[in-house]
Amino acid sequence: MRTLRSIISILTLCMFMSGSALMTAAQTAAPDNQVPDTQQYDQPNDNSATLPEAATPQDPMAQPQDQAQQQEDEVLPPPSNDSAQSTQEDPPARAARLQYITGSVSVQPQGTGDWVAGEINRPLTNSDNIWADKNSKAEIGVGTGVVRMGSESSLTLTNVIENTVQLQLHQGELYLHVRRLYDNERYEVDTPNQAFTVEKPGDYRFDVNPDTDKTIITVWRGEGESTGDGPTVRIHANEQVRFSNGTSMTVDTHTAPGPDDFDEWAQSRDQRQDQSASSRYVSPDTVGGDDLDEYGVWKETPDYGAVWYPSVAPGWAPYYYGHWIWEAPWGWTWVDYEPWGFAPFHYGRWVYGGGGWGWAPGPIYARPYYAPALVAWFGGGGWGVGIGFGGGFGWCPLGWGEPFIPWYGASFGYFRGVNYTNTRITNINITNIYHNNFVNGRPVPGGGINGAHNGSQFHYANMNRPGGFTAVSRNALVNSLSVAHNNIRVAPNQLSRMTPVRSLGVAPTRASIAASTGARAAVPPAHAFSRPVVSHMTAPNRGSFNRGPVNASSRPAFNNNGARPQAGTQRSAIGNANRGPAFNNSRAPQTSTRTPQPGSMGSRSVPRPPSAGNFGGR
Image 1 (cartoon, rainbow, N blue to C red):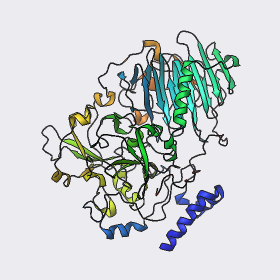
Image 2 (image 1 turned 180 degrees about the vertical axis):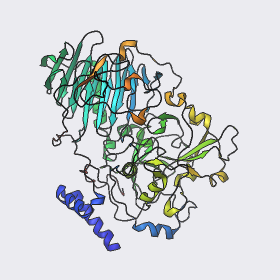
Image 3 (image 1 turned 60 degrees about the vertical axis):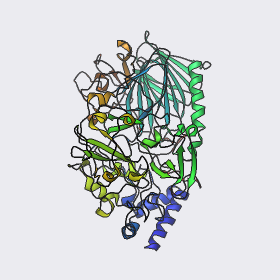
Image 4 (image 1 turned 90 degrees about the vertical axis):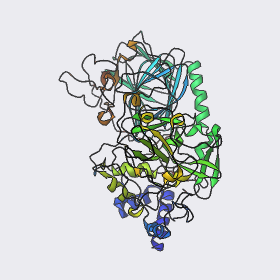
C-alpha cells in the first residue's frame, strides 16, 4: 500500500509539471477520477497534519488511533462537476459581495419587493437589484472581476454563476475591472441600447443616460463587442463608442477621452487590490481575499501551511460578530460585521492555535467554491439547553479537514468541489458521507448528520475551543438579529450532549430575506429599473433561486407566442412588465474557444501548480 501511495504521489507531481500530455494519460488510466472541464485538486501523498490541531490523542474530541489508521488509505479522487447522479440543480459556485459603499446604497433582494440599506459583506446573487443614490458609490466583488457603480445608478445581477457574470445597467455609470478570464467564462453588460461581451481582461466603462436614448462604452484596456438589432460592433482598447437610436446599433466611435473622477477612483481601488500581498496565499478567485492585508498577518505553520491571523481584540471568535440571512438558493447565510469578513467565512477553514483563531485558506491554485457559511449546526425544537421560547440553534466553525455538509440540495460533484477547494480532505470517506446525507441531490429527511468518520459520530475540533460554539434563539435567527447581542450561554457540560444536525428545519421569514439593518434605505425613482435592456445571453431559469413571489426583474423576455426566447440577442424589461416582444438577431452566441489572453486563466481542467512556501502542507 505504501508503494501504491508513493506511485500516486509521483504521478501527481508529474501532472503538475508536465502539462496536458500527462494529464491526458492520467485521464485514460483513471477515467472515473478525471472529468473534462473540472478543476484538478491537490492529491495528498501522506497523511501527516490532516487532522485539526485539536484532534490529538490527548483531546477528548480526537479519533482513536486505530480509526485514523484504518482511514489512512482512503485518499480521495479529485472532485467532478458531474451531476448526472443527481436530480438537484446545484447552487452557483460563485456569489457576489457588496464590499464597498460611500453615500447611500440600497439592495432589493429578488422576490421581496423591499429595498434595504446596503450592508458590507452581504452576498448578492441572481436578480438582486442594487441602487447607488445621488453622490454615492458601490463596489461589488465577483472573484475574477470587480463591478463599481457611480451616482444614481441602477444595476441588476442577471446571472452570477461559476462561468458567467451577466449584468444589466438601466441607468447611471458602471466601471468593470476584469482581472482574469477563464476560457469558458463570460462577462456581459446589458444596457437599453446594446449587449456588451468582454473578450479580454481589462477595464471597461459604461454610461447610460436616464433621460435620453444613449449608451456610451469606453474601453480603457481590453476588448469586446456589442450586439443589438444591427451589425455587431467591436470596441478596442482606448476607444469610446456612443450608441443611440434604440437598438439599431447606430454608433459614433472615437478615441477614449481622459479619465474623470469616477475612473480615477476605480483605478486607484484596482491598484490596491491587484497588488494584494494575500495573493501569495489565497486563490485569486476568492472573493474578499484582497481585504486581508491591512487587517491581519500571515504566518507559516507546520500543520496548516500559511494561516492568516486577524488583528482583533482578545476573546474574539469567528461566526459571532454578525447575523444570519436567508439567501436563495443556499438558505441560511452568514453576514459578518468585520470589514474583512467575507473570505474567511465563505471559504477555507478556521483553526485555533498560538492563543487565537486563524484562517487557513484552501489550495491557492484551486478555483474556489463559495459556501454560505462553513459551520456545523446543532439544535432545533428538541434542543435541551433550557430555552423556553421554541428552541434554539447553535453552530461551530468547521476545522481543518472537516467536511462541509450543505443544508441545501447539491450533487455529488458540487459536494466534492465545495470541500476540496476549501480545505484538505484526506482521511474521511467523503463519498459515504454524501450518500448517507443526500438522496437524488436532496438532503435526507430527518435533519441529522449521518455517516461520519467510519460511520461514527462527527467530532468537531473547534467545539471546545474558546468561543468556538455559539447559540441563539429561533427568534434571533429568523429575524436576522445580531448574534453578539442575542447569544445564549451554553454550559460546558451541555456541549458534550450536543447532536449535530444537517438542516435546521426552520423556514425563513420576510425579515430573514430582506435582512434589514434598520438603517434608512434610499428608494430609487420608479423609472430607474423600468427600462428594457438588450441581452445577448439568455437569462437563466430561476428555479430554486426564487425566494418568494417572483418580481418582474426575474422574468425573461417572451416572443409573440409566449415562448421562452432562444439564444441570441433579446430585449427584456427589468423592474416592470415586459414592454413588447423579444427579438432575436441572426448571430447566436458562440462558445469561447480562445486561448487564454495575457492575464487570463485556463479552464477549470488546467491547474496552476503550487509554488513552494505558498500554502505549506496543503
